[in-house]
Length: 186
Image (cartoon, rainbow, N blue to C red; front, top):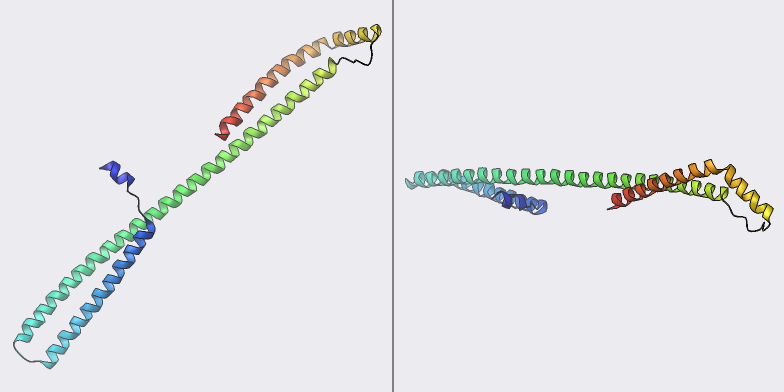
């Protein structure tokens, strides 16, 4: 039974239409009640027979029944309007929650993308520096130039080694940020 209630949806427009129909029916009943009361007064004023008392009692009984129906319909209309108002509030809250979740996701994606781009830029910077330090200058074919290159590499050996380590960490960080960014987009 609970599952059935959970799946029952309130159509706010249909509820509003039903409440309006009930309000129209109430108005019709009030007109009928007024006409009966007017008829009773006219009957009492223009007819003096013994049966007037019985007709008058019958009209009073019908008027009481109409009042009872009016009260019940008014209660039903109010309940429908209340349910529709609650549904509108729930729908608005659900929309606001979905919009907030979408904004939060967009922010997570933007941050993850920015973090990835920073990590990627740092990786490329370190890679470029390493390439500069280990550059093989093909335009200098002599032995002396080759010795200079080896000497340059030897001088920068510690920096090259450190850059290789930093480059590996930077690559790992960049890949980690890429995975975070990919996950944020799902």
